[in-house]
Amino acid sequence: MRVAVASCLLLCAVVAAQESGTPNPPSPPLANRPAPTRVRVSQGVMKSLILKKVDPKYPKEARNQHIEGAVIMGIVIGKTGDVSELRVISGNELLVPSAVEAAKQWKYRPYLFNGQPVEIESQITINYQLHR
Image (cartoon, rainbow, N blue to C red; front, top):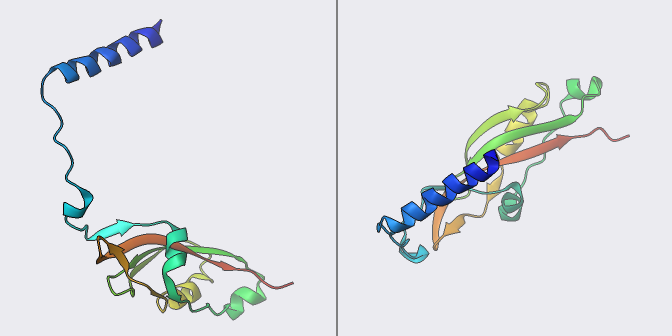
């Protein structure tokens, strides 16, 4: 019974909005919109844009303690493809400094929006695994 009432109320609200006579203005074509200053992209897109990837050095203390795991970082890539911001989201404290030092040196192909370079925001993951 509650579901039927909720459905009826929702339908009435939609019909009332349509009958109010205030149409939604059409969105301008994508080509006419100003480029955003920053866009969010997936880790997969980030991987396809990488030009230079510096591997981290496994910290000696972490190796001696047999510590493995991932360091996850939020990253902002500037219009030129350089790392402009980096923040640690998670990771073992012995692995983090090495991951940050390596990621700061990465270089990306500029991301284009309507032919113009824009900043991109994403996440990167650096995995540490001892070879057995």
